[in-house]
Image (cartoon, rainbow, N blue to C red):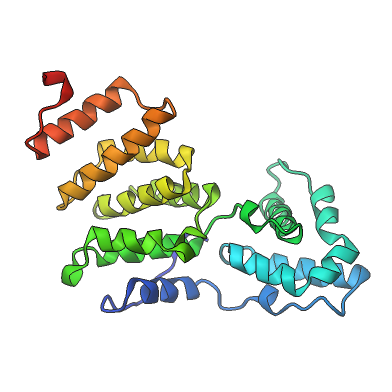
Amino acid sequence: MDPSDQYVSVELSKSPDEIANVLFGSMLPDDPLARLDLRAATGERGLALFMAALVHRLPQRSLERDEIVAFVERNRATLQHEGWLEFLIDKLPAGRSNDEGAPLLDAIRDAAVQMRHALRGRPQDINVISNRLLYLCIALDMKLGDDGFTYETAVAYLRRSQTQALMSDAAVMFMFADYYRNMDEIDEPRTGHVMLLTECALLADANGALLMAKVLLRGLPPPVDTAAWLDVRRRLAARLRSSGSWTAEDESSLARAVGRFTDEVPDDDL
């Protein structure tokens, strides 16, 4: 499910949502889980159909929160009656060995855990990665500076309720991990992209991702919009100070950036 493995032609004249939808849609040529109706399937046959759909679907791309909720609501009565989710969670314990099939079995178990949240009426507890959110951030970064598309406009896309619904600890950490995994292969540092990921981490209050953002933003060159860059770093600093995760070295780095790109005098010089 590595987006860097996908090569898709897309027109930059399209909106960020349209670009993200093209990229996102290219990952899933076939989705048997979306078509699966278990209302008439019971027992071993039903479980076999359910497992086959998961095995086919999970390696293709992320199973999104709204997809999980829709699947569970469509098949709620059967899932409750048959107890398949509990069966998979019990029979596929977490932290399996490094056997060849372990990643897929772990993914199946995690999907069952997330579906159980929906079955229990707690969709807010679903914690999954989101290729949809990643591709939106990529699209927003692609649009920055294009025909007056500003950083503030990009952040407004992220602050929409439907976008924030995609954000979870797992989703935001996945995006930072994707950047780290591919940073040596990209032609330029894409500081704007990391800033957008940081906005997601701030909105989701994902502390682990905020720590990753701190390290990245300290080392990456500033973008053209240095005012937005400094604003992100200041808000990141305020959040991490409150959690005790902001060091003297971090403070010194931020002070140097403020002194270089503004007329403000760093506190240490007062």
